[in-house]
Length: 259
Length: 259
DNA sequence: TATGGGAATATGTCGGACAAAACATCATTC
DNA sequence: GAATGATGTTTTGTCCGACATATTCCCATA
Figure: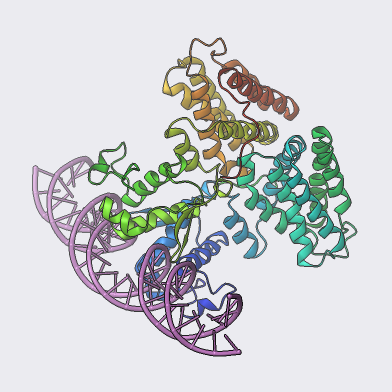
């Protein structure tokens, strides 16, 4: 285990959020280790005793962290056999934490980015259609606030990305489908990270503020036009996918699911 | 807490799966309590000490169970404040465990069933289209096995429902989108439970073996026809939704997301 | 070779103690 | 009287050490 990045033994609390509980910090660190491939899928991670010896963490805190990841389908524990990393197709790949860990530990694999785009293309257009049918006045205000921020912020600012995420969040919330709403955090994390990745090169001709396309979707939702909202939302996601294809290599064949 | 259904103190291991670990059993029991509304969203669940006193469980096992549910977004813990049930929109409503708990603890609310159908209608048709483009020979065999079992099993048998679930699983696996694949367990749980609910009345004229419609989808996938596969899959899900509308009350207005 | 039983080992459970954080209360101060 | 700050209480968070349980390994035996 010495060749792996070991959990910061003493000064782990110098992170961005020192207020986090220890078991949460460990879960974060462990999750990042796993998604970044430090431990191969199907293989065992170091046994508890080794972990505690290296990190100085107590067994209870470590075990609670492991339980978090077990709940996300990333780990399985068996008496005597040890704790193993689950094959990737068992992971909750739309879980907000998993998305965040994947994008915060370097560029995630192309098959993952592509799969997330495909999910957006499946989910966001019909969600916009539902929103057009069911949106309330409060929902509309969420859209207006997000669009206003998108229009008057520079795309290089974090606030612009936050506004973009808020717009897509408003779509899912406005759909008034609770299951869709529950995917909000994961989808928005995917939107935010894939968009940031897409717009990292500001000299690219595709890099322009897409606020008008967003406003067009909103206008159809406000007009209670499900068909129009779905069509414009489809164009929005397709444009994003095409732009991304222009700046990265997606033609790697089918994604490998074998772990 | 005495008025709530308390965790079986001593004979909890007489359940279906005595081989389960205690912390898993507790998580199952706690999850069922929460989805069945024993503890209102936003309100605190009994504090650890009370729990341990009533059940005889050790604190460590209980806390590990709580961590599982925290990972699914159903609970939040705060020092001194206690442990609270999260608002429903924060739950992972497509998590296999959440779906299972919801359907195994009595009939889930109509807004949940409807939302799951809407998710199926969003996800399964495009998944079928992807499967038509990307399916391998092994994928096709999964379809054939499932269809064969559906055709020659009686719809009252559990094996028929297992075959039905296998067919829908084959759609998601055959899509070769890892994120879709990761939703497999949750979607299939939704399919299985909503279908069992829909076919519970065998005297209903809608209650007939839909194997031919399934076979038609497979035929389009085998023929590498994404457009046809998507269209037939849409019809399949729409039929299921319409049949369900005929046997239950769905017109309850918009779902309430306020918890 | 097959098999049965015991040793080894990793996770699972238990109990108790103390730490830390958040809330409540009350006294102090302006 | 309102804002401020010290103090105590309560609940979750962390740590430690011991033992239980399940599974694998290994060897003796038939």
